[in-house]
Image (cartoon, rainbow, N blue to C red; front, side, top):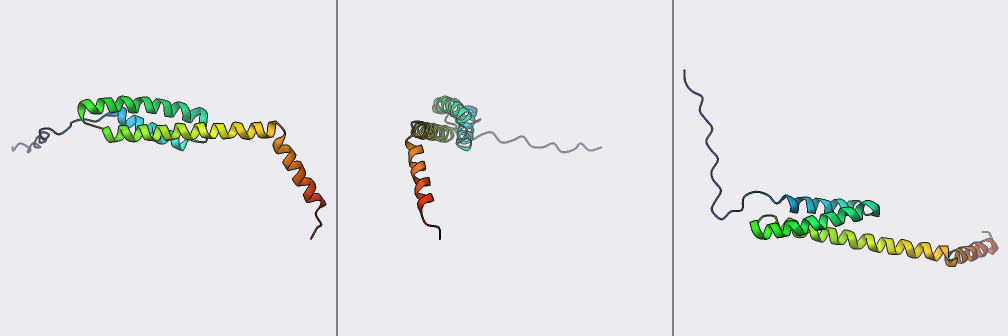
Length: 123
């Protein structure tokens, strides 16, 4: 009986090469992507972006110590900041439109346009 050949052991990592992964940076980047995808739902996107930003910052701190995941942490921070900024701009724009029509300014313009269209001769 012959013994089955055993698989060789994996080669050790090169000296100075970073080992492992930075889970905080990965999750922060993923949450940044999710926050951008959910941009039209600010009640979900804003908390997701805030959590993603916090995790990306923690991932960047861990990357300084271990040397792993600095790029993903930076990408996560950038994506989360962009998502937060766009959500804030959308909320401001929505509030401005609501205030404009709620105060009667937009309603007056629409009423005048409807009257002008009604007075115009039909082709």
